[in-house]
Image 1: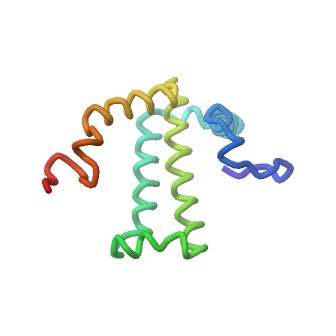
Image 2: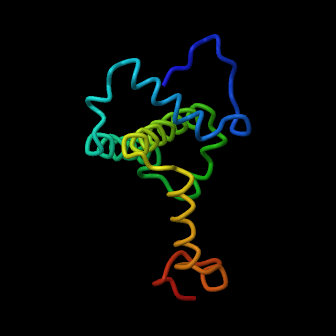
Length: 130
């Protein structure tokens, strides 16, 4: 999504989820793209963008991937792919009339129950036994 030049830069502290939902819906509406934004198409597009994000880390080590913030160009490119994934996720929530805060909060509540901190601190899953 390209922001109009006259709008000031925003920060995460000043931008709400509602702002992002509106920004993305306005972008879609202005181009008459709702006709193409079925849940199927949006979920597939999100997966494609996630694959493009993964390409930036393909064939490098975990340590090398953690060096991404030290490389301004790579960080910029990774940020663009993350933005694409987030934009498609928000567009999908818009189409399905899902409240992002509710679905994320509900999922995190399930994760807290599934992975209690006292059992999973320093572990990545049920099969990872110390």
